[in-house]
Length: 198
Image (cartoon, rainbow, N blue to C red; front, side):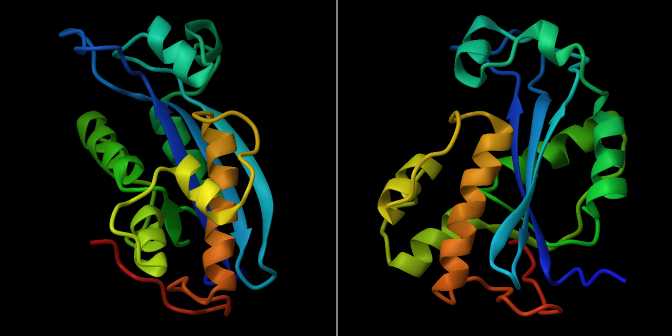
């Protein structure tokens, strides 16, 4: 039986977005879920996943393509949002594993979208806001963006910024740096309790 205290899901989402005001007939929807699995005991990144999600109530704007690299044709090949939520639970133990993201945007976007379409929220309550934790652990007055935190840590930005899969991979590197400093709340021990998100 898997020890869910050992593995952490690092998640980063990309969503439909616009330059300036959002069109009245559209809503922001998740179009990519990046996920990196971190083995807290071995202190390494062990899996990297990319889930494309087909939007139902919005279109990928030119601005969104410039930012994320994703096109409408590409996301049209993705799975539905309810299918993506089910996949997170079924294949990535999302409902039982602690998960982390850079800031609270990803958590709040999932909460909004699951509520709006009436599907089960795929994650448990154990969420770590890595952005806030990084600032707290390093005594920083302001919270850094992911790219700024990588620079602060002397770590390279691997892949493309605003690619969900690449961002999750990079955030996981920052998680491991916190683990190495003994600043990660769940610790590198299997079975350690995880904090509740505030």
